[in-house]
Image (cartoon, rainbow over the protein chains, first blue to last red):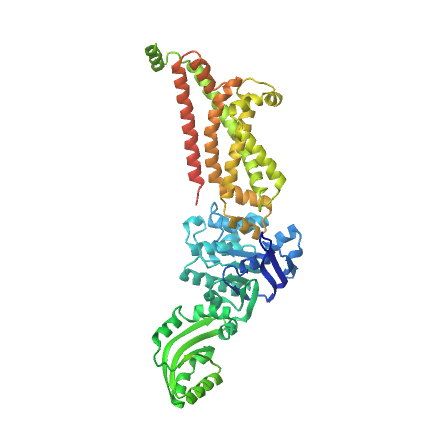
Length: 341
Length: 228
Protein backbone atom coordinates (compact mmCIF):
# COMPACT_ATOMS: atom_id res chain seq x y z
CA UNK A 1 0.00 0.00 0.00
CA UNK A 2 2.82 2.36 0.90
CA UNK A 3 6.36 2.18 -0.31
CA UNK A 4 9.26 4.49 0.31
CA UNK A 5 12.35 4.34 -1.86
CA UNK A 6 15.60 5.98 -0.82
CA UNK A 7 13.58 8.72 0.81
CA UNK A 8 15.67 11.63 2.04
CA UNK A 9 14.71 15.02 3.42
CA UNK A 10 17.34 17.63 4.14
CA UNK A 11 16.42 20.97 5.71
CA UNK A 12 18.74 23.77 4.72
CA UNK A 13 19.94 25.78 7.68
CA UNK A 14 22.36 28.59 8.34
CA UNK A 15 25.04 26.48 10.02
CA UNK A 16 24.82 23.07 8.43
CA UNK A 17 21.95 21.34 6.66
CA UNK A 18 19.86 19.03 8.85
CA UNK A 19 19.14 15.57 7.50
CA UNK A 20 15.76 14.77 9.04
CA UNK A 21 15.09 11.64 6.99
CA UNK A 22 18.08 9.74 5.72
CA UNK A 23 17.74 7.28 2.84
CA UNK A 24 14.76 5.31 4.13
CA UNK A 25 13.34 2.30 2.30
CA UNK A 26 10.10 0.81 3.50
CA UNK A 27 7.12 -1.19 2.33
CA UNK A 28 3.88 -1.31 4.29
CA UNK A 29 1.31 -3.87 3.15
CA UNK A 30 -2.38 -2.96 2.97
CA UNK A 31 -4.34 -3.36 6.18
CA UNK A 32 -1.31 -3.17 8.43
CA UNK A 33 -0.83 -0.91 11.43
CA UNK A 34 2.74 0.28 11.16
CA UNK A 35 4.35 2.18 14.00
CA UNK A 36 7.41 4.38 13.96
CA UNK A 37 8.91 5.08 17.36
CA UNK A 38 11.65 7.50 18.23
CA UNK A 39 12.52 10.38 20.50
CA UNK A 40 11.73 13.92 19.43
CA UNK A 41 14.14 15.07 16.76
CA UNK A 42 14.50 11.57 15.33
CA UNK A 43 12.78 12.70 12.14
CA UNK A 44 9.54 10.77 12.53
CA UNK A 45 7.33 13.86 12.18
CA UNK A 46 9.08 14.74 8.94
CA UNK A 47 8.74 11.15 7.75
CA UNK A 48 4.98 11.05 8.22
CA UNK A 49 4.62 14.46 6.53
CA UNK A 50 6.51 13.14 3.53
CA UNK A 51 3.83 10.49 3.07
CA UNK A 52 1.19 13.05 2.09
CA UNK A 53 3.68 15.59 0.84
CA UNK A 54 3.13 18.18 3.55
CA UNK A 55 6.92 18.08 3.25
CA UNK A 56 8.55 17.66 -0.13
CA UNK A 57 11.32 15.07 -0.27
CA UNK A 58 14.83 16.17 -1.15
CA UNK A 59 15.28 12.92 -3.01
CA UNK A 60 13.65 9.52 -3.24
CA UNK A 61 10.09 8.45 -3.85
CA UNK A 62 6.89 8.02 -1.92
CA UNK A 63 4.24 5.81 -3.38
CA UNK A 64 0.81 5.38 -1.82
CA UNK A 65 -1.77 3.02 -3.31
CA UNK A 66 0.17 2.79 -6.56
CA UNK A 67 0.49 6.57 -7.00
CA UNK A 68 3.90 8.16 -6.84
CA UNK A 69 3.02 11.07 -4.59
CA UNK A 70 6.14 13.09 -5.35
CA UNK A 71 5.40 13.10 -9.08
CA UNK A 72 1.82 14.33 -8.97
CA UNK A 73 0.71 17.75 -10.19
CA UNK A 74 -0.70 20.14 -7.58
CA UNK A 75 -4.25 19.20 -8.39
CA UNK A 76 -3.55 15.47 -8.54
CA UNK A 77 -1.85 15.80 -5.17
CA UNK A 78 -4.98 17.40 -3.71
CA UNK A 79 -7.06 14.49 -4.94
CA UNK A 80 -4.52 11.98 -3.63
CA UNK A 81 -4.60 13.67 -0.21
CA UNK A 82 -8.35 13.15 -0.03
CA UNK A 83 -7.55 9.44 0.08
CA UNK A 84 -5.01 9.81 2.86
CA UNK A 85 -6.54 10.77 6.20
CA UNK A 86 -4.43 12.36 8.90
CA UNK A 87 -4.89 12.96 12.61
CA UNK A 88 -2.75 15.16 14.81
CA UNK A 89 -1.38 15.43 18.32
CA UNK A 90 -3.25 18.66 18.96
CA UNK A 91 -6.31 17.57 16.96
CA UNK A 92 -6.28 20.70 14.77
CA UNK A 93 -10.03 21.07 14.68
CA UNK A 94 -11.72 24.26 13.49
CA UNK A 95 -13.03 25.78 16.70
CA UNK A 96 -15.48 27.95 14.78
CA UNK A 97 -17.30 24.84 13.59
CA UNK A 98 -19.40 22.28 15.43
CA UNK A 99 -18.46 18.60 15.54
CA UNK A 100 -20.72 17.87 12.57
CA UNK A 101 -19.36 20.86 10.62
CA UNK A 102 -15.79 19.80 11.33
CA UNK A 103 -16.52 16.35 9.95
CA UNK A 104 -18.23 18.01 6.98
CA UNK A 105 -15.07 19.97 6.17
CA UNK A 106 -13.28 17.31 4.07
CA UNK A 107 -16.60 16.50 2.37
CA UNK A 108 -16.98 20.18 1.43
CA UNK A 109 -13.47 20.17 0.06
CA UNK A 110 -14.30 17.18 -2.08
CA UNK A 111 -17.58 18.84 -3.12
CA UNK A 112 -20.02 16.19 -1.95
CA UNK A 113 -23.71 17.05 -2.29
CA UNK A 114 -25.72 17.96 0.78
CA UNK A 115 -27.69 14.75 1.20
CA UNK A 116 -24.68 12.48 0.94
CA UNK A 117 -22.78 14.75 3.28
CA UNK A 118 -25.35 14.58 6.03
CA UNK A 119 -25.68 10.84 5.81
CA UNK A 120 -21.92 10.39 5.95
CA UNK A 121 -21.58 12.76 8.94
CA UNK A 122 -24.13 10.77 10.92
CA UNK A 123 -22.41 7.48 10.09
CA UNK A 124 -19.08 8.85 11.21
CA UNK A 125 -20.39 10.39 14.43
CA UNK A 126 -21.79 6.99 15.36
CA UNK A 127 -18.62 5.18 14.28
CA UNK A 128 -16.38 7.19 16.59
CA UNK A 129 -18.83 7.07 19.47
CA UNK A 130 -19.94 10.70 19.58
CA UNK A 131 -23.63 10.12 18.96
CA UNK A 132 -25.63 13.15 20.11
CA UNK A 133 -22.62 15.50 20.26
CA UNK A 134 -22.86 16.66 16.65
CA UNK A 135 -23.90 20.20 17.56
CA UNK A 136 -21.22 20.68 20.24
CA UNK A 137 -18.24 22.95 19.61
CA UNK A 138 -14.70 21.58 20.06
CA UNK A 139 -14.20 23.80 23.13
CA UNK A 140 -16.98 21.88 24.84
CA UNK A 141 -15.28 18.51 24.30
CA UNK A 142 -12.60 16.62 26.23
CA UNK A 143 -9.27 15.76 24.61
CA UNK A 144 -10.35 12.23 23.81
CA UNK A 145 -13.58 13.44 22.25
CA UNK A 146 -11.67 15.98 20.17
CA UNK A 147 -9.44 13.25 18.83
CA UNK A 148 -12.54 11.23 17.98
CA UNK A 149 -13.74 14.17 15.91
CA UNK A 150 -10.28 14.26 14.32
CA UNK A 151 -10.57 10.59 13.43
CA UNK A 152 -14.10 10.98 12.04
CA UNK A 153 -12.90 13.92 9.95
CA UNK A 154 -9.92 11.94 8.67
CA UNK A 155 -12.18 9.06 7.66
CA UNK A 156 -14.85 11.19 5.99
CA UNK A 157 -13.69 10.62 2.42
CA UNK A 158 -13.14 6.88 2.89
CA UNK A 159 -9.36 7.04 2.75
CA UNK A 160 -7.24 3.95 2.23
CA UNK A 161 -4.51 5.17 4.53
CA UNK A 162 -4.64 6.91 7.91
CA UNK A 163 -1.62 8.82 9.18
CA UNK A 164 -1.43 9.40 12.92
CA UNK A 165 0.97 12.11 14.03
CA UNK A 166 1.50 11.52 17.78
CA UNK A 167 -2.27 11.13 17.95
CA UNK A 168 -2.36 10.08 21.59
CA UNK A 169 0.57 12.05 22.98
CA UNK A 170 -1.62 14.82 24.38
CA UNK A 171 -4.03 12.41 26.05
CA UNK A 172 -4.07 10.74 29.47
CA UNK A 173 -3.39 6.96 29.63
CA UNK A 174 -7.02 5.92 29.90
CA UNK A 175 -8.12 8.11 26.99
CA UNK A 176 -5.09 6.94 25.00
CA UNK A 177 -6.29 3.37 25.37
CA UNK A 178 -9.81 4.21 24.24
CA UNK A 179 -8.46 6.00 21.16
CA UNK A 180 -6.15 3.07 20.40
CA UNK A 181 -9.11 0.70 20.69
CA UNK A 182 -10.99 2.86 18.23
CA UNK A 183 -8.06 2.81 15.79
CA UNK A 184 -7.82 -1.00 16.05
CA UNK A 185 -11.53 -1.21 15.48
CA UNK A 186 -11.33 0.97 12.37
CA UNK A 187 -8.36 -1.00 11.09
CA UNK A 188 -10.36 -4.22 11.32
CA UNK A 189 -13.72 -2.89 10.17
CA UNK A 190 -12.50 -0.82 7.25
CA UNK A 191 -9.28 -2.62 6.40
CA UNK A 192 -7.52 0.70 6.65
CA UNK A 193 -3.72 0.87 6.51
CA UNK A 194 -2.51 2.93 9.47
CA UNK A 195 0.87 4.58 9.88
CA UNK A 196 1.51 6.07 13.27
CA UNK A 197 4.41 7.83 14.87
CA UNK A 198 4.86 7.99 18.61
CA UNK A 199 7.37 8.11 21.41
CA UNK A 200 5.32 5.75 23.56
CA UNK A 201 6.15 2.06 23.27
CA UNK A 202 2.82 1.37 24.90
CA UNK A 203 1.09 2.53 21.72
CA UNK A 204 3.24 0.28 19.56
CA UNK A 205 2.67 -2.70 21.84
CA UNK A 206 -1.05 -2.22 21.95
CA UNK A 207 -2.02 -1.83 18.32
CA UNK A 208 0.86 -2.16 15.85
CA UNK A 209 1.65 -5.16 13.69
CA UNK A 210 5.09 -3.90 12.72
CA UNK A 211 7.39 -1.32 14.16
CA UNK A 212 10.42 0.67 13.09
CA UNK A 213 12.70 2.34 15.59
CA UNK A 214 13.97 5.64 14.29
CA UNK A 215 17.09 7.54 15.29
CA UNK A 216 18.75 10.44 13.51
CA UNK A 217 16.67 10.00 10.38
CA UNK A 218 17.29 6.27 9.99
CA UNK A 219 15.51 3.08 10.98
CA UNK A 220 17.87 1.37 13.41
CA UNK A 221 15.62 -1.62 13.83
CA UNK A 222 12.48 -2.81 12.15
CA UNK A 223 10.20 -5.81 12.18
CA UNK A 224 7.24 -7.62 13.62
CA UNK A 225 6.28 -6.09 16.98
CA UNK A 226 6.53 -9.31 18.99
CA UNK A 227 9.96 -10.10 17.54
CA UNK A 228 11.27 -6.67 18.25
CA UNK A 229 9.96 -6.91 21.81
CA UNK A 230 11.47 -10.34 22.29
CA UNK A 231 14.84 -9.75 20.68
CA UNK A 232 15.60 -6.05 20.71
CA UNK A 233 19.03 -5.68 19.15
CA UNK A 234 19.86 -2.01 19.33
CA UNK A 235 20.36 -0.06 22.55
CA UNK A 236 17.68 2.41 21.45
CA UNK A 237 15.17 -0.39 20.93
CA UNK A 238 15.95 -1.91 24.29
CA UNK A 239 15.28 1.41 25.94
CA UNK A 240 11.87 1.65 24.31
CA UNK A 241 11.00 -1.96 25.11
CA UNK A 242 11.81 -1.28 28.74
CA UNK A 243 9.17 1.46 28.75
CA UNK A 244 6.48 -1.19 28.73
CA UNK A 245 8.14 -4.24 30.26
CA UNK A 246 9.73 -2.75 33.33
CA UNK A 247 8.59 -0.10 35.70
CA UNK A 248 10.99 2.83 35.48
CA UNK A 249 12.93 2.10 38.61
CA UNK A 250 13.38 -1.67 38.33
CA UNK A 251 17.12 -1.72 37.83
CA UNK A 252 17.73 0.94 40.40
CA UNK A 253 15.61 -0.94 42.91
CA UNK A 254 17.46 -4.18 42.24
CA UNK A 255 20.79 -2.49 42.67
CA UNK A 256 19.75 -1.02 45.99
CA UNK A 257 18.31 -4.31 47.12
CA UNK A 258 21.49 -6.25 46.51
CA UNK A 259 24.03 -3.55 46.97
CA UNK A 260 27.21 -5.32 48.13
CA UNK A 261 25.28 -8.21 49.62
CA UNK A 262 25.56 -11.82 48.60
CA UNK A 263 23.26 -11.77 45.64
CA UNK A 264 23.85 -14.87 43.56
CA UNK A 265 22.79 -14.42 39.94
CA UNK A 266 20.29 -11.74 39.00
CA UNK A 267 18.60 -12.73 35.74
CA UNK A 268 16.05 -11.23 33.40
CA UNK A 269 13.91 -13.80 31.58
CA UNK A 270 12.07 -12.75 28.46
CA UNK A 271 9.40 -14.98 26.99
CA UNK A 272 6.47 -14.90 24.61
CA UNK A 273 3.09 -16.43 24.04
CA UNK A 274 2.47 -19.87 25.43
CA UNK A 275 5.80 -19.96 27.25
CA UNK A 276 4.08 -17.91 29.89
CA UNK A 277 1.86 -20.88 30.69
CA UNK A 278 4.73 -23.31 31.25
CA UNK A 279 5.87 -24.12 34.74
CA UNK A 280 9.46 -23.30 33.91
CA UNK A 281 10.56 -22.05 37.31
CA UNK A 282 8.97 -25.02 39.03
CA UNK A 283 10.84 -27.36 36.68
CA UNK A 284 14.12 -25.59 37.37
CA UNK A 285 13.80 -25.88 41.14
CA UNK A 286 12.85 -29.57 40.95
CA UNK A 287 15.54 -30.59 38.49
CA UNK A 288 18.51 -28.57 39.67
CA UNK A 289 20.19 -27.85 42.91
CA UNK A 290 19.56 -24.10 42.96
CA UNK A 291 17.35 -21.76 44.93
CA UNK A 292 15.21 -19.33 43.02
CA UNK A 293 13.74 -16.11 44.33
CA UNK A 294 11.21 -14.31 42.14
CA UNK A 295 11.72 -10.52 42.25
CA UNK A 296 9.38 -9.07 39.68
CA UNK A 297 7.39 -10.14 36.67
CA UNK A 298 5.23 -8.50 34.05
CA UNK A 299 3.07 -9.68 31.17
CA UNK A 300 2.20 -7.44 28.23
CA UNK A 301 -0.15 -8.03 25.36
CA UNK A 302 0.82 -7.24 21.75
CA UNK A 303 -1.25 -7.74 18.60
CA UNK A 304 0.56 -11.03 17.94
CA UNK A 305 0.63 -12.51 21.38
CA UNK A 306 1.77 -12.20 24.93
CA UNK A 307 5.16 -11.01 25.90
CA UNK A 308 6.60 -11.12 29.39
CA UNK A 309 9.60 -10.47 31.56
CA UNK A 310 10.58 -12.02 34.87
CA UNK A 311 13.38 -10.99 37.19
CA UNK A 312 14.75 -13.78 39.37
CA UNK A 313 17.57 -14.22 41.81
CA UNK A 314 19.33 -17.62 41.67
CA UNK A 315 21.80 -19.08 44.12
CA UNK A 316 23.80 -22.27 43.80
CA UNK A 317 27.09 -23.76 42.59
CA UNK A 318 28.41 -22.20 39.37
CA UNK A 319 28.12 -25.42 37.29
CA UNK A 320 24.52 -25.88 38.39
CA UNK A 321 23.73 -22.27 37.49
CA UNK A 322 25.25 -22.73 34.04
CA UNK A 323 23.10 -25.82 33.51
CA UNK A 324 19.99 -23.96 34.55
CA UNK A 325 20.73 -21.12 32.15
CA UNK A 326 21.21 -23.60 29.33
CA UNK A 327 17.99 -25.37 30.31
CA UNK A 328 16.03 -22.14 30.24
CA UNK A 329 17.47 -21.17 26.87
CA UNK A 330 16.56 -24.56 25.44
CA UNK A 331 12.97 -23.68 26.18
CA UNK A 332 13.14 -20.61 23.96
CA UNK A 333 13.16 -18.20 26.81
CA UNK A 334 15.76 -15.47 26.62
CA UNK A 335 17.76 -15.12 29.75
CA UNK A 336 20.17 -12.36 30.54
CA UNK A 337 22.34 -12.35 33.63
CA UNK A 338 22.22 -8.78 34.88
CA UNK A 339 24.81 -9.28 37.60
CA UNK A 340 26.40 -12.01 39.71
CA UNK A 341 29.04 -12.22 42.38
CA UNK B 1 -18.90 86.44 29.87
CA UNK B 2 -18.03 83.02 31.29
CA UNK B 3 -21.38 82.88 33.04
CA UNK B 4 -23.15 83.65 29.84
CA UNK B 5 -21.21 80.93 27.98
CA UNK B 6 -21.83 78.24 30.55
CA UNK B 7 -25.39 79.33 30.90
CA UNK B 8 -26.04 79.17 27.21
CA UNK B 9 -24.30 75.80 27.09
CA UNK B 10 -26.74 74.36 29.58
CA UNK B 11 -29.76 76.03 28.04
CA UNK B 12 -28.75 74.73 24.62
CA UNK B 13 -30.52 77.78 23.21
CA UNK B 14 -28.15 78.01 20.23
CA UNK B 15 -28.67 74.44 19.16
CA UNK B 16 -30.54 74.06 15.93
CA UNK B 17 -31.78 70.48 16.30
CA UNK B 18 -32.55 70.13 12.64
CA UNK B 19 -28.94 70.93 11.74
CA UNK B 20 -27.72 68.69 14.53
CA UNK B 21 -29.79 65.79 13.24
CA UNK B 22 -28.57 66.35 9.69
CA UNK B 23 -24.96 66.43 10.89
CA UNK B 24 -25.53 63.22 12.85
CA UNK B 25 -26.85 61.50 9.73
CA UNK B 26 -23.86 62.76 7.75
CA UNK B 27 -21.46 61.39 10.35
CA UNK B 28 -23.30 58.07 10.41
CA UNK B 29 -23.33 57.94 6.63
CA UNK B 30 -19.59 58.60 6.36
CA UNK B 31 -18.79 56.15 9.16
CA UNK B 32 -20.91 53.26 7.94
CA UNK B 33 -19.99 53.49 4.26
CA UNK B 34 -16.30 54.04 4.99
CA UNK B 35 -16.36 51.20 7.52
CA UNK B 36 -17.88 48.78 5.02
CA UNK B 37 -15.18 49.50 2.44
CA UNK B 38 -12.46 49.55 5.07
CA UNK B 39 -13.58 46.10 6.17
CA UNK B 40 -13.38 44.75 2.61
CA UNK B 41 -10.13 46.45 1.56
CA UNK B 42 -8.55 45.88 4.95
CA UNK B 43 -9.22 42.15 4.76
CA UNK B 44 -7.89 42.00 1.21
CA UNK B 45 -4.75 43.92 2.17
CA UNK B 46 -4.35 41.93 5.38
CA UNK B 47 -4.69 38.63 3.53
CA UNK B 48 -2.16 39.83 0.97
CA UNK B 49 0.26 40.81 3.73
CA UNK B 50 -0.20 37.51 5.50
CA UNK B 51 -0.23 35.15 2.52
CA UNK B 52 2.76 36.69 0.74
CA UNK B 53 4.90 36.49 3.87
CA UNK B 54 7.67 33.93 4.30
CA UNK B 55 6.50 30.36 4.68
CA UNK B 56 2.88 31.17 3.80
CA UNK B 57 0.67 29.97 0.97
CA UNK B 58 1.60 32.64 -1.60
CA UNK B 59 5.10 33.44 -0.39
CA UNK B 60 6.26 36.33 -2.58
CA UNK B 61 8.85 38.85 -1.46
CA UNK B 62 7.95 41.54 -3.99
CA UNK B 63 4.22 41.49 -3.31
CA UNK B 64 4.88 41.47 0.41
CA UNK B 65 7.29 44.38 0.25
CA UNK B 66 4.96 46.51 -1.91
CA UNK B 67 1.91 45.79 0.26
CA UNK B 68 3.84 46.45 3.45
CA UNK B 69 5.20 49.72 2.04
CA UNK B 70 1.74 50.88 0.99
CA UNK B 71 0.25 49.98 4.36
CA UNK B 72 3.03 51.63 6.33
CA UNK B 73 3.03 54.83 4.33
CA UNK B 74 -0.71 55.43 4.41
CA UNK B 75 -0.95 54.42 8.04
CA UNK B 76 1.73 56.97 8.95
CA UNK B 77 0.37 60.08 7.21
CA UNK B 78 -1.67 62.17 9.67
CA UNK B 79 -5.26 62.04 8.52
CA UNK B 80 -5.72 65.78 8.25
CA UNK B 81 -2.81 65.91 5.80
CA UNK B 82 -3.99 62.82 3.93
CA UNK B 83 -7.35 64.47 3.19
CA UNK B 84 -5.65 67.50 1.70
CA UNK B 85 -3.19 65.42 -0.30
CA UNK B 86 -6.02 63.32 -1.69
CA UNK B 87 -8.12 66.28 -2.90
CA UNK B 88 -7.21 65.85 -6.59
CA UNK B 89 -7.76 62.10 -6.37
CA UNK B 90 -11.12 62.53 -4.66
CA UNK B 91 -12.23 65.09 -7.23
CA UNK B 92 -11.39 62.67 -10.02
CA UNK B 93 -13.21 59.63 -8.69
CA UNK B 94 -16.13 61.26 -6.83
CA UNK B 95 -16.61 64.17 -9.24
CA UNK B 96 -17.10 66.60 -6.35
CA UNK B 97 -15.36 68.03 -3.35
CA UNK B 98 -18.53 68.79 -1.44
CA UNK B 99 -20.64 66.81 1.00
CA UNK B 100 -20.04 63.66 3.02
CA UNK B 101 -19.33 61.47 -0.05
CA UNK B 102 -16.26 63.55 -0.80
CA UNK B 103 -14.74 62.40 2.48
CA UNK B 104 -15.12 58.70 1.71
CA UNK B 105 -11.96 58.08 -0.38
CA UNK B 106 -9.73 59.68 2.22
CA UNK B 107 -11.50 57.88 5.07
CA UNK B 108 -11.14 54.49 3.38
CA UNK B 109 -7.57 55.04 2.23
CA UNK B 110 -6.64 56.22 5.71
CA UNK B 111 -8.39 53.47 7.67
CA UNK B 112 -7.92 50.38 5.47
CA UNK B 113 -4.13 50.10 6.02
CA UNK B 114 -4.65 50.45 9.77
CA UNK B 115 -7.22 47.67 9.69
CA UNK B 116 -5.05 45.59 7.34
CA UNK B 117 -2.38 45.36 10.06
CA UNK B 118 -5.01 44.20 12.55
CA UNK B 119 -6.20 41.62 10.02
CA UNK B 120 -2.64 40.40 9.54
CA UNK B 121 -2.20 40.01 13.30
CA UNK B 122 -5.51 38.15 13.53
CA UNK B 123 -4.47 35.75 10.76
CA UNK B 124 -1.11 35.11 12.42
CA UNK B 125 -2.93 34.01 15.54
CA UNK B 126 -4.47 31.05 13.71
CA UNK B 127 -2.91 27.76 14.71
CA UNK B 128 -0.63 26.58 11.89
CA UNK B 129 -1.76 23.03 12.60
CA UNK B 130 -5.27 23.86 11.44
CA UNK B 131 -3.96 25.11 8.10
CA UNK B 132 -1.82 21.98 7.84
CA UNK B 133 -4.87 19.84 8.58
CA UNK B 134 -6.79 21.56 5.79
CA UNK B 135 -3.90 20.94 3.39
CA UNK B 136 -3.75 17.29 4.43
CA UNK B 137 -7.41 16.98 3.42
CA UNK B 138 -6.61 18.26 -0.04
CA UNK B 139 -7.95 21.80 0.34
CA UNK B 140 -6.83 24.33 -2.28
CA UNK B 141 -5.74 27.84 -1.35
CA UNK B 142 -9.15 29.38 -1.98
CA UNK B 143 -10.77 26.84 0.33
CA UNK B 144 -8.12 27.44 2.97
CA UNK B 145 -8.84 31.18 2.85
CA UNK B 146 -12.63 31.00 2.85
CA UNK B 147 -13.11 27.96 5.07
CA UNK B 148 -10.21 28.23 7.50
CA UNK B 149 -8.44 31.58 7.63
CA UNK B 150 -11.45 33.92 7.62
CA UNK B 151 -13.89 31.94 9.81
CA UNK B 152 -11.21 31.01 12.33
CA UNK B 153 -10.05 34.60 12.73
CA UNK B 154 -13.54 36.16 12.59
CA UNK B 155 -13.77 37.22 16.27
CA UNK B 156 -10.42 39.01 15.96
CA UNK B 157 -11.50 40.51 12.62
CA UNK B 158 -14.66 41.86 14.24
CA UNK B 159 -12.94 43.27 17.30
CA UNK B 160 -10.36 44.77 14.95
CA UNK B 161 -13.01 46.50 12.84
CA UNK B 162 -14.57 47.79 16.07
CA UNK B 163 -11.31 49.47 17.05
CA UNK B 164 -10.99 50.79 13.50
CA UNK B 165 -14.54 52.14 13.56
CA UNK B 166 -13.75 54.33 16.57
CA UNK B 167 -10.75 55.76 14.72
CA UNK B 168 -12.92 56.25 11.64
CA UNK B 169 -15.54 58.23 13.56
CA UNK B 170 -12.85 60.59 14.77
CA UNK B 171 -11.51 60.86 11.22
CA UNK B 172 -14.98 61.92 10.01
CA UNK B 173 -14.78 64.87 12.37
CA UNK B 174 -11.65 66.04 10.60
CA UNK B 175 -13.22 65.56 7.21
CA UNK B 176 -15.14 68.77 7.89
CA UNK B 177 -12.02 70.59 6.73
CA UNK B 178 -12.84 69.74 3.14
CA UNK B 179 -16.49 70.59 3.60
CA UNK B 180 -17.74 67.10 4.22
CA UNK B 181 -20.17 68.13 6.93
CA UNK B 182 -20.96 65.93 9.91
CA UNK B 183 -20.85 66.50 13.65
CA UNK B 184 -17.18 67.45 13.74
CA UNK B 185 -17.73 70.12 11.15
CA UNK B 186 -20.77 71.43 13.02
CA UNK B 187 -18.95 71.47 16.35
CA UNK B 188 -16.07 73.38 14.81
CA UNK B 189 -17.86 75.92 12.60
CA UNK B 190 -21.09 76.61 14.44
CA UNK B 191 -19.79 75.71 17.86
CA UNK B 192 -16.20 76.79 18.26
CA UNK B 193 -15.88 79.54 15.66
CA UNK B 194 -19.10 81.26 16.77
CA UNK B 195 -18.53 80.63 20.47
CA UNK B 196 -21.63 78.47 20.78
CA UNK B 197 -20.27 76.09 23.41
CA UNK B 198 -23.62 74.33 23.70
CA UNK B 199 -23.44 73.23 20.06
CA UNK B 200 -19.93 71.85 20.57
CA UNK B 201 -21.02 69.98 23.68
CA UNK B 202 -24.13 68.47 22.11
CA UNK B 203 -22.18 67.43 19.01
CA UNK B 204 -19.51 65.84 21.20
CA UNK B 205 -22.15 64.04 23.21
CA UNK B 206 -23.71 62.58 20.07
CA UNK B 207 -20.31 61.45 18.78
CA UNK B 208 -19.74 59.71 22.11
CA UNK B 209 -23.07 57.92 21.83
CA UNK B 210 -22.25 56.78 18.30
CA UNK B 211 -18.88 55.47 19.50
CA UNK B 212 -20.51 53.60 22.39
CA UNK B 213 -23.07 52.03 20.07
CA UNK B 214 -20.38 50.86 17.63
CA UNK B 215 -18.31 49.48 20.49
CA UNK B 216 -21.31 47.69 21.94
CA UNK B 217 -22.28 46.11 18.62
CA UNK B 218 -18.66 45.05 18.03
CA UNK B 219 -18.30 43.49 21.48
CA UNK B 220 -21.63 41.74 21.15
CA UNK B 221 -20.74 40.21 17.77
CA UNK B 222 -17.28 39.16 18.91
CA UNK B 223 -18.70 37.38 21.91
CA UNK B 224 -21.39 35.73 19.86
CA UNK B 225 -19.02 34.40 17.21
CA UNK B 226 -16.22 33.33 19.52
CA UNK B 227 -16.66 29.62 20.25
CA UNK B 228 -13.19 29.06 21.67
